Image (tube, rainbow, N blue to C red):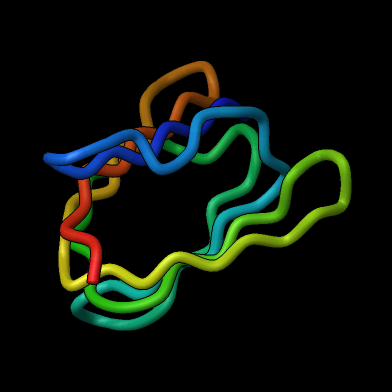
Length: 80
């Protein structure tokens, strides 16, 4: 799936990932390819697993995660 992570200052990441694990206001969510469309608020860490096998972690003060049709995910965040 294609992921974009943006803050007001910069684009933190853009590329293909296999899995996203994000902390929301109500718990933790895992996004996989083909996930249903959702919009949720973020609060805390964000871990992504790239198709290359690399794992990256981002810390967010808050933000919004949007899963769009056809496996496109956009995160608008407030980086720590």
